[in-house]
Length: 162
Image (tube, rainbow, N blue to C red; front, side, top):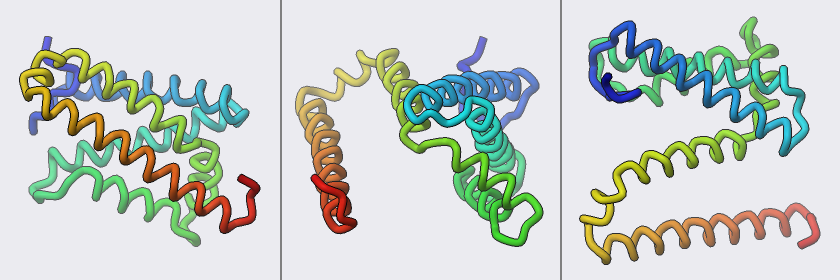
């Protein structure tokens, strides 16, 4: 059986099924985290994640099937902007449900998935050498620290007590 997502240009029935399965699992876990962490209604979170998953699926499909050399993130962004643009018939529906999905819920599940993926190739990661591991730790720590500093400054500027 091929990898769940093999990144090839071919779109097979099995590949489509794998993408749908992955997006469904991702959506359910994110909706649960969204409900537990932010108290958004489960139904609203599931519908919002369904919209985001559908956008993702269409964007990835377009990247592989259309003859243009355009990344799927461009397709996903353009379609998302188009269906949520004020004045579009879908704007209120999409905006309401997607606004019930917190970014941190999505990112948490995504990073867990990436961590599992890295765990499968830990030997390859170690083969890069100890310097690469130190650089990776420093980059991740610096990114976190930088984000915390920016968030703190924004909170102070908006009057939220520190």
